Image 1 (cartoon, rainbow, N blue to C red):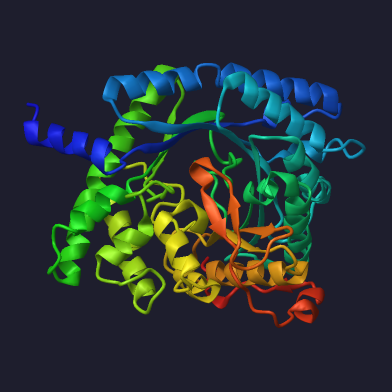
Image 2: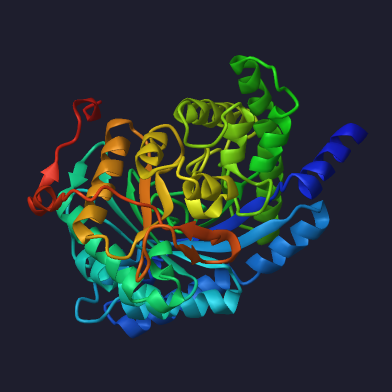
Length: 452
């Protein structure tokens, strides 16, 4: 029997608290598109993506109308393109990027992820070529996203890849300097990357996944903030219970949408990623949740503890609402995409050092952070290494999405617009890490990686 209170509560969540489905993402395997002739491979890639995702946007819009809940993005993730590039050593992988863009345009999706390589233990055929082509590929495309996995708990950290990615991040910003350095905003460097992540820019379709499937990424920081503000004097454990119950409700909506999309598209349902993904919109901020717990400003002392509480409670509430929870699942802290984070960075309360501490307990890592355009590539590599170390030691996914703001200094802003928001240029530690990064080699896996 329909409960009027529950219906009205959901309507309030959507209309007043920014509840939305952040994305439905179709994962598509391209393993059967591998061909030594890159022209034939690109044709197969285009044909398969456009056939599988032909109705993805249409179905998303139908579900929006049917349930009355916004689905902000419709996206596609594909098999890491380095696997296809490996058998075409004499051709530029950029041809694949251009094909992915053509397919994204045909399908009408917001983003297409998978221009990716997995090099956590070393480089194989195709990896180096693809990584070195990333700046050009991201400059020549609009909707294509890229990711590189440079470490894992089981393998350690590939420091040669870390050194290379510092250069690639900087080049990606330089080649799109006339577009607010957007290339770097479409590139993520991972440790412990997952195969079923629906969120960009890090999504790719893992080789252990089925041929085609649907993932859903939910959101709702505004809903959680509104819930905890009803309990200004509650104890910490009471707040945890409130967040768990709220996360349950948000995840049930994601489960409903994912199940419906799976049926309408006739493809398997993959996972619900129950991450709290913020936007620059007023009232849709993870930082404001933390401040609602009693912090004067996000970034002050106590922020890491509050974020740990939030992340854990979101996971516990979400897993009770769906048997298919996966992806990253927790709380994201992308600075440029979160109104509260932006304010905290602008007023100086939120620093890179505090953000790094927060990444030890949140879903991902140093995300959508703008740094001065003259930052040395070795410093970018060192930031990547630090985040990878946190992920490796703690059995968690960490990532770095830094945007060197070419031509800008601390205190200026990059304006991306849309979900990417605007990023204040943040200061970084000026002391050099160049000699450490130049050593190369591999940071060995921690002792607790040996579990068999």
